Image (cartoon, rainbow, N blue to C red; front, side, top):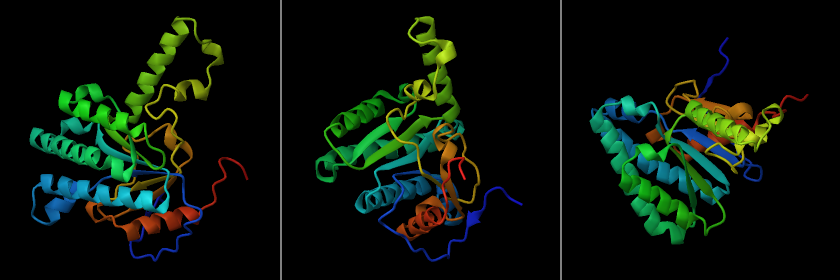
Length: 249
C-alpha cells in the first residue's frame, strides 16, 4: 500500500472559499515532459510553465490565499544542460522585470528563498529590487525558491546557530525550534498548510523539509503547464476533506 497517492484529475471539486489554507506551496514540475510530448524543446516547456505560474499566482491572490511559495530552481538543477539553465534564468529575469513594472498595480509582495549569491549580478539585483518594492505592500505574498535546497537551508541555519553559540549569544543546551527558524530563508513566514506536486512524482525533492512537517500533500499526474485553476480547486477540495490533528486525536 502506497504511503501517498496521486489524485484522479477528473474528480469534481467543491471548494469552500471561506476556509482556504493560509499558505500553499507548489513544486512546479513537469515542464520538460510537457514540451517533449509536443515535440518541443525543453525550454518551451519552461516558458509555458512560467506563464502558468503567473496565472496561478494571480488567481491565488484573487481568492484570498495569503502566501504562495513555489519551487523555481533547486540547488540540484545546476546539473541540467547549460542551455536549459540559461533559458530558465532568462525567463526569471523577464518575469521579474515585468513584475516590477506591474507591482504598483498588482501590489503582490515577493520574497526569495535560497542562496542568491550563485546567480549572476543582474538577477541578484532584480531579486533585491523586487523585495525592496514589496516592503510597501500588504496582502498576498509570493515566495520564489531560487537556488534553494531544504538540506542547504538547514545546514546554513545550523551554521548560524553554531556561530551564535560560540559568540555566547545562545546556550547550546537551551536551543529551541524558534531559534533555528529565525535563521531559515522563510523566517517570519507561516509553515505551508498544503504542498502540491504536479507531474506524477511522489516526493518532496528537497523542498521545505523543515516547514512541511505538518503540511497536507496533494499529488497529481497533471504536468505543471497544464495545472489549471480547476486543478487547483481539486487540490483545495482534497485539503478541505482532511482532518488536521497535528499529532492530537
